[in-house]
Length: 300
Figure 1 (cartoon, rainbow, N blue to C red):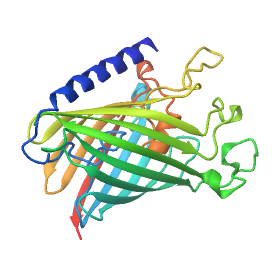
Figure 2 (cartoon, helix red, strand yellow):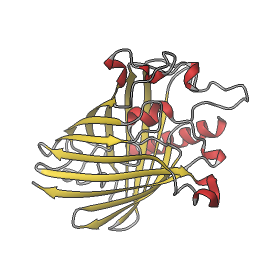
Figure 3 (tube, rainbow, N blue to C red):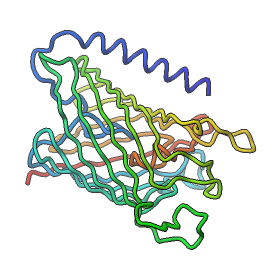
Figure 4 (cartoon, rainbow, N blue to C red):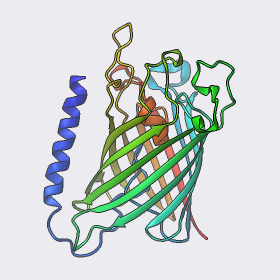
């Protein structure tokens, strides 16, 4: 717990110092604060250009501490995503995706809307965007009324996340962003669902940064802090039930419309409606996993 708060304080300090530097006037509108529409777990401030279709496939594998028996997690798939995003304008994009799901609600279909309202430039020291995500679980209806997938009404299958994203490209090598967000689940876990009871609405904040190593490669980092009285609860063995989703990775822009990302994260879920409320893996216990994303853009 102490280590998590120390890390968060350090990240906040770096963001604050970087933001103060970014107050200097910019010559032109900033291009590519981040290379992709996602950092690792978090949405980035970027949108897709008008008329471009972005198809991506992403994987999250099993815990690395599984060792040789699971090939350090590579034989297990914690989550898988197939996603199509399309640029309606240079500043508005929509997306449709299917994920396996790793939380209590699985077999998820999600719709995304993102609108970039401000671009960093001479009149603004930062870029800003808003996004909304709606997720519907298509998993079969359960027979046990005490389980979360009993689904007495259709609305219980639905979850939402809305967020505001503020980002600044401090230099050609360094960029950061911060994103306050709100996740709402129409049905929440009970003790019979292996977790403590929780509240429907869950506020959180995400921070991310990118350090450009050279023209093609960048180091990326993101972390999400959910705020709830249940986030620090411990089970009967004295173990915390929830942990902050944290990811580190390398982003590789190969040219020709390809972006390839390799990452390590304790988050098992990929979508905000999954990893924000349901991350239970602890980095300090070796409960992190390898993941990757391949994205390819097409002009329609």
